[in-house]
Structures are given as C-alpha cells and as structure tokens.
Amino acid sequence: MTAQLCSDCAVRDRALCASLDDVELDALNTLGQKRRLARGETLQWAGEESLVCGNLISGVLKLSATTPDGREQVVGLLYPADFVGRPWADHADFTITALGDVELCVFPRGPFERVLEDHVHMERLLLQRTLAALDEARGRMLTLARLSAREKLAGFLLDLADRSHGCRATAFGPVTFDLPLTRGEMAEVLGLTIETVSRQLSKLKAEGAINLMGARGITIRDRAKLEAA
Amino acid sequence: MTAQLCSDCAVRDRALCASLDDVELDALNTLGQKRRLARGETLQWAGEESLVCGNLISGVLKLSATTPDGREQVVGLLYPADFVGRPWADHADFTITALGDVELCVFPRGPFERVLEDHVHMERLLLQRTLAALDEARGRMLTLARLSAREKLAGFLLDLADRSHGCRATAFGPVTFDLPLTRGEMAEVLGLTIETVSRQLSKLKAEGAINLMGARGITIRDRAKLEAA
DNA sequence: CGAGTATTTGAACAACGTCAATCCTGGTGG
DNA sequence: CCACCAGGATTGACGTTGTTCAAATACTCG
Image (cartoon, rainbow over all chains, first blue to last red; front, side, top):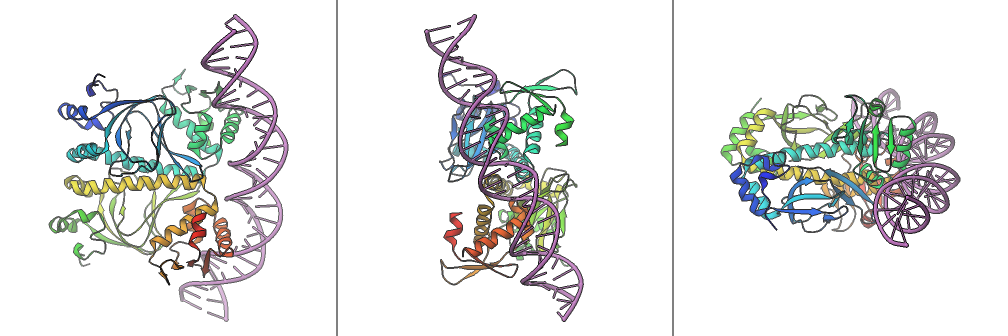
C-alpha cells in the first residue's frame, strides 16, 4: 500500500493538523495510516482498550452509549475534519460506528499523545474543539430531556439542512438533500423510537413543512414552520 | 479586603493551579479574586458576555440551559476544585448558579487565557479535565434519554452518596447524608418534574431502599437495591 | 407559634412506547 | 424487462410512564 501524503488530504486545513507546518506534518505522516470503514462497521467498542486517535476524512461516524440491558443512545456525530478518539484514557467509554462508508486517518494513541504534548498549538486546538464539543453535548442534554418529539425532529432536520450541501432553487427557498441516517438512527440520536420519528415526519409532511421522497430524500419546504417548533 | 494567599487555598492541590509552582502561583494571586455567592445567586447568565474563569473552592454550582419558553435543564454540576468558565468564548452558553453558598476564585477571562497559553502544563490539565467532562456529559445523555425515572433517581442517589462524606456505621452498612439539592433541583438535573422525583423517592422509601428524614436528610439503606435499578 | 416554602399525594390526561400488521422501495436474478 | 425479495418505513390500536393541575401536609426560620 502506498503511503498517503498529508498534503493531499481532503481535510488538511480543517482538521487538527492545520496547526502543523509541512515539516511537522511529514513526521505525522509516518505515524498515520488511512483506514476505511464500511457502513455499519465499528472502529471501537465501548469498554474496549482505546487504541487509536485520528481525524475523520469523509463520511459520518456515530458515538454511542448503551445500558447494560441494551438500550442505546447516540451521544455524538462526527463529521469530516472532526477529531476521533480519546487521548489519555485507556478504555473507551463509547462505541464508534460508521453511519455510511467512512475514511479516516488514524494514529496509535500513545505516539499521538506524545505529538500533542510536543505541539502546543495542536494541543490548544484540541482543547478548543473539546470545549466546543462539551458545549454541544450540554446543549443536546437540554434537547434530550426537555423537548417534545416534534421539537427534537424539527431541530435535527434544520441542523442537517445547514450541514448538508443540498441544492436549493433560491436563497431562502426550499432545500433538498439526502438524510445521512435511517429512521432508526435518527431515533437513536434523538432519544425516541423509530415509530415516533416516522410519525412526526409524516405529520410535518402533512403540514407542508417538509417533503419526503423515498426513504432518504427530504425537502425543507417551510423553514419558518420548523424553526417555530 | 486583604488579599488571599493561594498557598492557603483549600483546593490548592486539586484545582488547575496544582500544575503551578509557588512562583507562578504568586503571579496568578495578583490576578485572582475571591468571590462569594449566596444560595441561588447566579455568577453568569446564558447569552451574557463571558467575563470570568476560575476555580470553585467550596459549595456546589449548577450549569443550566433553558429553552426560549422557559423549560430548564441542569447540564452539569460543579464541585470544589472544579474549573468554572469557558475560555475562548465571548458569550456564555449556560447559566451558572449557586446551589448552596459558594466560594470561588475568579480571574478575568482574557488574562486567564494568557496564563493558560503560557503554562503548557496547566493547559494540558484543563484539556484532560475537559475531555473527562465531555465523557461525563455524554454519559448523562444516555441517562436523560433512555433511563426510567426510577433508574435516574437511583443512579443519582448513589452518585451523591459516593461524593458525600456522609457518616456510616459500618463499611458496607447504610450511609446517611444531606442532599445538597431540593427536589426541584434534582428534577432539573434528571430531566423530570418535582412530582415524579418525590413519588419515586417515596416509592424507594416504601421498598426499604432508602430512608428520608426531613426534606434533606437521606439514608441509603439497601445499596444493592439501588444499584439494581 | 405562624407564615411561607418545600414536599407529598391524588386523579385525570397526554405523549410516547410497544406490538403487530402492512406498505414501500431499491436491488437481484430470472 | 419484470417479478420477487428483504430491509426499512409507515400506520394503527393499545398500554405505560410521566406530566399537569390541584390540594393537603410537613418543614424551616423568624
């Protein structure tokens, strides 16, 4: 397998590595390894030894927690350029699974920690991202605990719409894009069941707020109505 | 007001400052300021400009988020030696309120950020704490979204019991301590209502798992039964 | 002792989950 | 090209949990 060059990396200037110059990057390059996961494959199981850290290059990963009796909750979604892994913890608290096909760049955890320690700028970037992730997680606690199913779904759809590069006819007109998650996965993210997600989507469609095309396609028809919820 | 000496600080070696030697500490000393909050006072409102960072010295703080229409969720509790504030964000996302009387040591945010940047060891400590806080927040997402009221309460009580220095007759016997929160505050933390919290406590008492004495006193009578839930 | 607040308890209700049946839809192979 | 198949999605009926509204009771601090 040919070594990949960081300089060609799709997320070179958005991932943590943006804090490194080309020379430093070369050093990392020898440590890192490209890794691909197919839809549904898991990079790491909760409870397992935490072996790797890295950057997500393409695709979406979910981070999930489970109760002893099998109830599951997605506690985070990772998008391209996001940092993956948990430095300084020898056991992982969460399971990391690919939602679609995924490409990432991984480093053995120990050596990666040493790189962090040697590169203050990179460590600071990670701190800032972690603080932001913490804010986001806390915001999601409000969502999970206090919003109604309808509110959760409306907010989630708006979030996806903003993140997607869906096509739209006019600046404020309808946006169309593909959901990167199944109904079941949306349920896991929002703390609901498949049926509730499906019902709420149907209701939003009936009210004209959205349009559904096939299992994955969606159009935000009336953004204001979603925002109201 | 007499300047306080860090060397006398109750959390000198557990807070972030543990990473500093006495000389560095002197420098911080001139920046920092003791601050007291009475029960219910708030240090910072969500949306407000984020002015201070600091360390909690004594008491408990709650971090909470609210919906536009006033529903509230506690997204974090801070205990002595915990770090308070959000460096590198000019607006606070969460409201910080004292649950009991509180003592903390605060620094203006800007200068504090500079101290962080100049003290790699301290910055690393903050990163490690932030990563841990993120794990905890994510764990609480599972609790909020998937556990029943009974499970939430049982878990919360065990948590408090472990944290409290309550007195116990024998090593594995019953522990008695005072709840640092009202029923209403527990409800805010667990994503429930006051009534549900009260009902579940009554039920646990009826089952002999706990004992309630007055509004605040509690005894963990049957730890195993709580852990089972 | 007494006012004000926190807590407990009850009854009716709504939202969401569960169980079960049916419907799509996209992919496969004849 | 079309029929079929499997997994995901939808819909319906019903049960449960937790909320809401309301009232009574217990604490705590003057």
